[in-house]
Amino acid sequence: MATAAALFSPQTILIGGGIVDMKSYPRQTLKQRIAESLPHSLVVQPLDIRWAALGWQAAIHGAVLLGAA
Image (cartoon, rainbow, N blue to C red; front, top):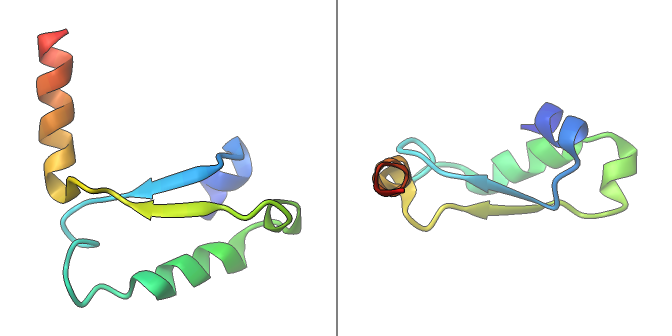
C-alpha cells in the first residue's frame, strides 16, 4: 500500500475486505506501518486511511453497479 501511495500520491487510501473486517485485525498497526514506509515527501501531507463501510461486500456491490451500467 505504501508503494502504491508513493506512485500515485492519493489523498485517501480505502481499505476493505474480509481479513481487515475481523474484529481482532490490528488496524492501527497497519496504519503505522504504511506511514513508516512512505517517503518523507508524503508525510508532509498526511495520508487519510479509511476503512470500507461495506467491508467484504464492496466487491459485490461494485459488480452489481457495473452490470447495471
